[in-house]
Length: 188
Image (cartoon, rainbow, N blue to C red):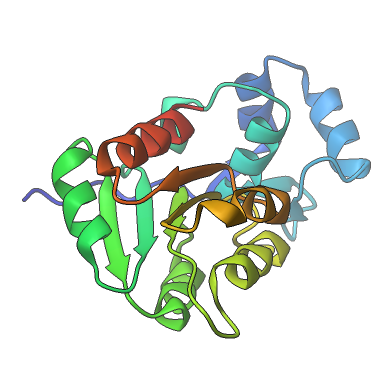
């Protein structure tokens, strides 16, 4: 398997302006108003992290440019038996990097290195069960942009999951529907 190019992680105000088809002053205004997270270099230039640009573009309905997709989209699957991750690895396009986790703590640790574009969560009991995990992901600066799909046999928690911040809800064992939901979220 060929190694993929590392995705660009930092962008200038000009880059973001091109993505949104607006001028540089608009980007500075959005940054000053807190619409998009940024930091300043020692030379006082604005820089934007990839995850923050993705969050901004998705929040306001802008298309995601190819340069933000470099390295291929990443999907983390948190399920108890690992079957969903194995199935998705065969179902999704070759360019999608699927990682499976049976332990939510392991998944969160992996997300600290580089957050995925989509997280598939099978709700479980415990402190980091499905709904609590969704809230933790939504509350973290590094993970708030992650699209979350709840994949479960528990049809009765649909409304709770969506209210907690899930982007989609799919009933097990419909792996085909799960693949469609992930594909739609990656194309957003």
